[in-house]
Image (cartoon, rainbow, N blue to C red; front, top):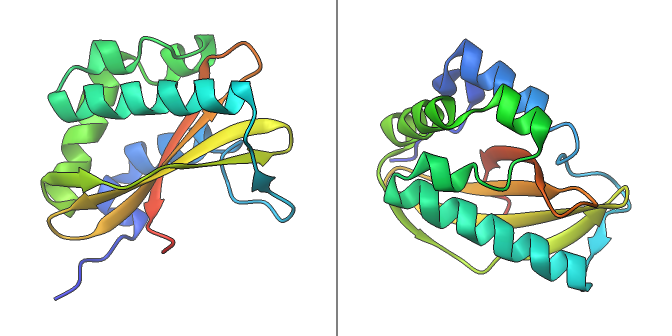
Amino acid sequence: MTASTDLKHFGKTSAALALLLCAACMAVPGARAADSADGAQCRALAQHMLNALVRGDSKAAAHAFDTDMRTALPPAKLSELWGEVQSNFGKYKAQSSARILKVNGINVVITPMQFTKTALDAQVACNARGQIAGFFLRPNST
């Protein structure tokens, strides 16, 4: 049995929010691997955020959000979104090694995450100031 990863499972509001926040995260032709110091910093921020979400600590997860992300996805809303993800895709089980891409000058960390019903990729984009500027979940690409 396979689970659908169609965005309709997130609910209209959450799907719209996720799409809005992901403008900088979408896969773009010409994306390339990023091995810079700022790429490593983005990887650490993404890992911290995802680990905090898994622990249920949305305040810690949102700690490094930039102003736009804090406005659009405050901790309470982030917690609600994470609850919807687990409700629709199953409980979080594990994550695999992240990869870092540079997309239009922005570092994007893609972390494969396994849930009981399906696998998703968490995409976290970081701005030049070392803040999280985007977060999106999409069907696993592997």
